[in-house]
Amino acid sequence: VRLDSTNMNLLVVDKGNNVIRVINLVTRNVSTAVGNGAFGYAAEGSFLVQAPLSSPNDVVLNANELFIADSMANRVLAT
Image (cartoon, rainbow, N blue to C red; front, side):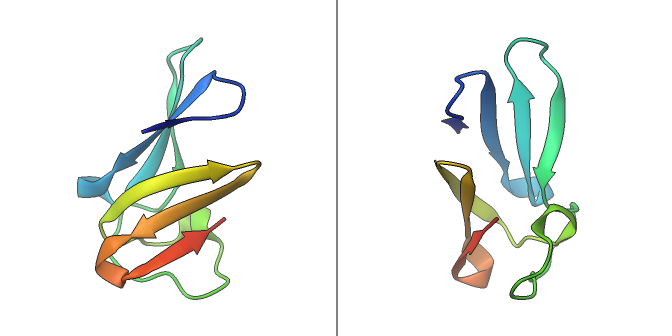
């Protein structure tokens, strides 16, 4: 779980559903930021919003770039 730079959005790893969620703390809306819900391996350079993830474990936000620890794929993905 991480806050973005505005402190208005909470980034949540939904490991069981293979997605990264964003919860807007003002509106309380929940949306999917990364992942399509399928278990799989994203191709290098693929558009991660629609890519499958394989048990994402953690997220780190650096400026406007999101890094995802995709644990079953043994790699870190960057948006």
